[in-house]
Length: 322
Length: 310
Image (cartoon, rainbow over all chains, first blue to last red; front, side, top):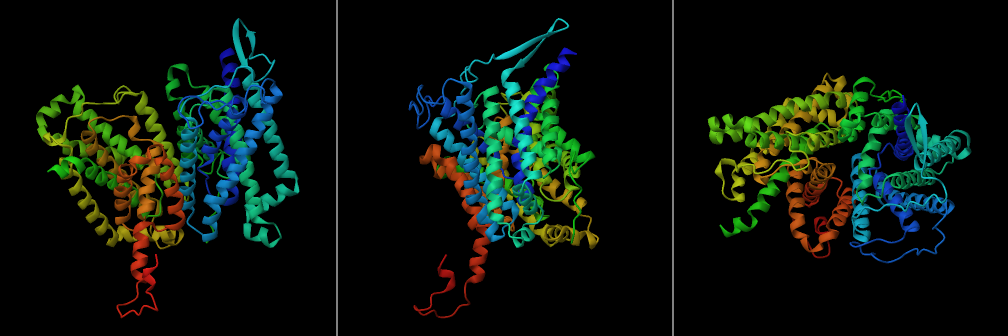
């Protein structure tokens, strides 16, 4: 019972990050019908941006080693609010990078009416550039956020249930809460506001939307910004729970995010959320003796869903029209 | 022989990577993007490495002598074909991006397995794989890889003109129309995928002795990107494209050695620029240049030929 509850808590925390990260893929996919393979690199960037703001110092191997970008007196040190501000700025910067990626790797393709496969390749190219630039600038080391980023909050709440202990880390609560709040805001924006209505129109049919006076390019830019924002914030959240594990650490999450969106249903926003939570929970319930196989769980689920319900848990069946 | 001593390894690597590029070409003939080749390449290599080093196979090795090497190729081909059907059928019933995503998942699952199973040597991998046919120099592997390249090219050429090749092309151009004409798309897409899988598996089995050691780094997502780059930069519409792309990009690290850390950044930029400006790949661009060149006639300096400007 306690074990079940503990797994549930761990699974929901990591699953909620998978959800907001995968939403970044979904937003772009639902509008352009393309998977942005640079999303994993933006996730990495988010973590590095926030780390730079909060700690500001890198060691040993990069070009900017030993330069103290934001020394101890800078406003991002110390309190939980300062950390929150740094995470927010990190996410905004990631969103801006995603907009630049759109400009460089996607828009020229669209203008030429190129094969969608080529956009996939060029986004992979962008990811390769970003990841290796990070490596050149700050080296390949893994960094951990200082333990006091949440100010005076206790690092964990420990309950006793029937003589066994349940540990709820503060990080987990924050991750889950932030993710849920973001999902609610996003759901409101997309479902209830004029901007959301326009976004849905562009996703449904860009041609008709532009005839109705919606600037398609503008909404594609907004979509990429939102996608990058979610990706960057997910990167920060994951790295506070574990660590900023080198320039390549977003790649693994990027691939897992693909399993999430296929599981939930390509292009489905609720699907990305459900898919993320399901994969997070499935990983948390992997027995300890098989923990080495944990990273294969998401991908195994992808095959299972392709076999039994190819449109995904919440996806619509696509009818191919001639 | 000095030339072969110095460049032999590079030449064999170029052929080997060209073959891996070709393993993506077959599914692409039917319009399917597969990123599974590193998985089958790793699988083939592991099968060969296990058969060539594991004590359980000592009896086979004694009995077969040098014939053990072709036998490892055969087993790798069979295993790749079976696994190719298992992976291909669920993913290829669907249209669009699903095969790419499913094959990414396939490569990840195989990587996790090979890192954790004892038969694959875990994270360390398998080593001290004996040299094929008692070769003493690396360049001698050219006697394996060059004939393979020729056989694969001949096969691809014959395939293109055959009934199956035409079915592939019909599916690539319009799957629905092909279906309406009585071509079962799933069956042909799986066939195209399995041909690529078998090729990658056999190349893996040939490469394990060549590289002497085999580990989980052989089958990664990075390798998927690399093979995809070979195919698209070389050109995916002609069998020469992936071969040329693989050979060129495999020699790139050698050429760019002085750039050290910036090499991968440049690799990424090449991918972006090539997908923008060389959508048909190098071979496609060359073909277009040749078609655009005007018929032979005297050209006055005031009217330059179209083909002169790149």
